[in-house]
Image (cartoon, rainbow, N blue to C red; front, top):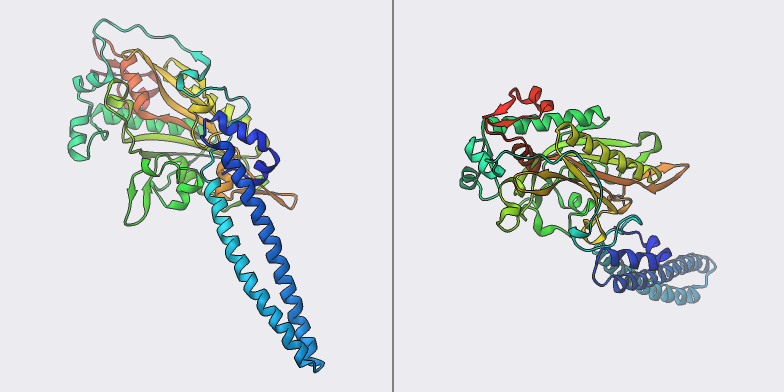
Length: 423
């Protein structure tokens, strides 16, 4: 959530940032925030003055009574009665103003960092790095949705029978390579200094609000209505919310956590080659890295996270590229996002497998996550990234490593899965 002081001191920059994110009605929303805040401040001052005057008169009444000036005391009492009525009116007005102000603020997205390129569509994202060699496949190569049937390692029909479309069943070597990837990614995160966390996969509304999924993505999460709990879209949400309402000491920073969870998203998209097979699912596995940093260190941390994800792709021997997302393609909460995409040889296109983002103070303001330093508290910066999401990584491994004899497993995974070939 944007800070009111930030909007007041940087009105023009705020409007410009909202426009770069293609947020409709940005200027009107900013003007409304400033009007409501000014009215709220005026009401608060009047309320404070009314209460102070009422308290002063209450003391005056006591003095008049002691002096035997009962008639004068009754006159003052009548005045205090009027002030009490007015203070109640002001308190009600203040509650309404604060509620109205809050309702506008939570609709505003985070502002993009100055390095974010202009643009509205994925085609306008900036390619900043490409790594690896695009593989040339043998003549009989097929997409992963055909490979998984050929080798009977993932069953979408069985998943549809049990739950519905977008819920695959991993079988045999398919399940084992899935587990191998999870363990490999977690081990790499631990080696990079992250603490492993196993969080709940259900969250309450406060947690959804804290990291920005609510109210923005209310309809995109699975909701257990009776208990008012939500299935997580990513481990970012429960791990970051571990620090909700926390005041950290400077000595505790930086905080680096990593967690594996299944993830759940209702918006699996329309059927077609671009979302076929493992390309987009309702349920999938992901390892998430989460960091809490001092503001002056957060962008160096973002670059470090990007390099960590790239190291995973390099060890898996997958060709990839890094994109800096344009303003219109960024998430609601992000200030700067790098996407990592791997080349899917059989599909002949790039597949997004990771996003690493800096949210600056947007989440921490919602979370009330602060650091105490020199007797003062300040909002911290939060960051997270996929390291990595499994479905498209697995799809690319299957497609890029297929041969006439079977699918070769990347060398780094062989100790984890116990076999070298799916065949």
